[in-house]
Length: 116
Image 1 (spheres, rainbow, N blue to C red):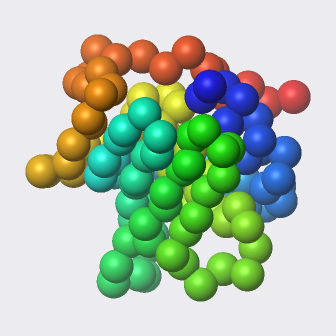
Image 2 (image 1 turned 90 degrees about the horizontal axis):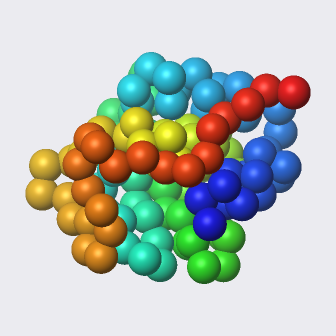
């Protein structure tokens, strides 16, 4: 499911925003807040912003939401959150939950990010 979700975000995201999302994911700007079988909640730190936007990935519907003020969907926050979640590189927020999902640094996602 994670591979098809990543593909859906990549297809819908403008290239400039996707590139910014890749950069944020590589920089470790993404924090996992909560993960269930139906949705994943993450926050993406952005320089110059007092509050990190929250991204929610609705896994069953392959839909997403971000509370930033971008007029484009998906935004760079959604791209960064999805990339970090699929690659398993999102850091865990203190007090976050992973109900029904495998947690910890040993969990590995089954998708790889490739550039064509």
